[in-house]
Image (cartoon, rainbow, N blue to C red; front, side, top):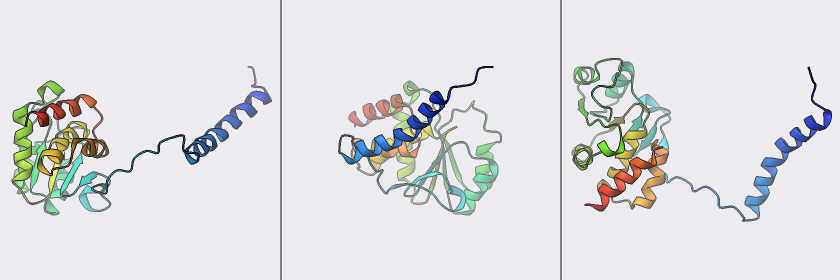
Length: 190
């Protein structure tokens, strides 16, 4: 077994220590653009059923909730559940029936790929969010797809320009640029 030389260990330690210092110096010198701050409208909820989830105003976006989490949201007054998963995706429980038992309105507006994120689906999503005044639980499996639909709401429902809303949608959980592009096309057609 070969042992690393002291020089190799010393070099590795110096590189690990120096890298953060170099980044800090470059930023202080103005040669790097700092990451933009996300608007205060997008936060991570700190308490209640939404704790740890992305939240913007009255909308919480998350991955697939459990039956217990759904009950906690219902207890806190969430009246609308918008499920962006396709009907065939396994949720681990009958989400529609559970939501109904809890007195929540449940809508499945599922899609998987950007080309299945249709104009009709986005229009229905905007209408659904716009027709309720209460808090809304929005989800898909991971929060990625649902954050894409939230982007359409943010622009068309709340009047925020797309370039401002896009980083907000990323803070809400959007990771697939193709969903953002599809929403951009939908917005342009309105």
